[in-house]
Image (tube, rainbow, N blue to C red; front, side, top):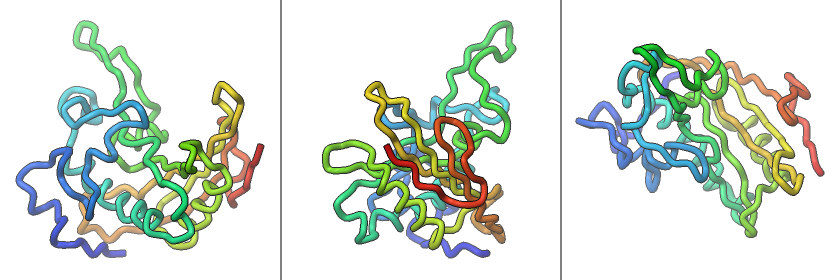
Length: 210
């Protein structure tokens, strides 16, 4: 599938990719940099080998595709009473170096955190008017994207890691590997439901409530 890139936001026309680089109306790269309550920036990111700066264009290409999916939800009337937030954005490991060798936090290859390093995977949550995760709406968001979005894998993840034991729902969108937005992108459209780190289904979405 070929992507039609809005000329206004064509990253190939950018002399430099910054946090302020626009991906769509009202959405910049910085919106995706870091997790909720833990922001980062391009200067703090490492490349795949942890030996130099990140490839900003590679990250921005994935974030452009993520933005199209994100905007679908923010503009969907059924979520008008909620906020769709980026809860798990571009991942910044915390490396430190000992005698020129990497000895810090290394995400497992092909894991969600590994994909998050380049924006290939991003986690989203639906927040209610009280500022809390709404697991019912999270399921609705997953179903909406399952039917209308393009993705390599969609993961509906629930957990009860909050201090009060309440349930949180997060929807991860994983994109296919691409080299540029000119690629003929093929989407596998796999789905999975996870609860407290354990897979519940690799073939459908399951709603898990308190």
